[in-house]
Length: 126
Image (cartoon, rainbow, N blue to C red):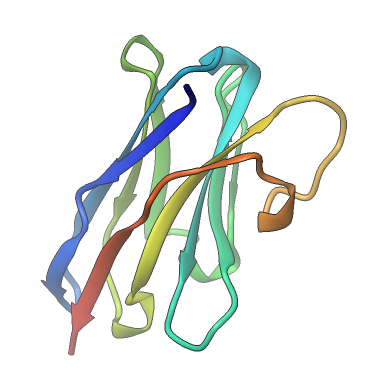
């Protein structure tokens, strides 16, 4: 059974940091890319970052470049999202998702991802 389990969300003041974790199981980790998405109330889900496990290639949305860092620990089948300099507009439910790295795809298009975690709430107060 495929499982993605997020953790690490919480309440933080603007300018603070959080590290999200996404623990994966039930599939061959190296064959996938793991993306982080977020969804604020009343807004569409949007891509935040993605890492391809096999070659480590990374993508970031412009609105998090220089503030967020994605990484993976392949021995633990876990992907992390280090979030620094958080802003109130970063408040959202954050999800991780998995997609096979086969062929071309649009990394930030949530509709292309096969598996999803349950989400973790991140709230940034001003």
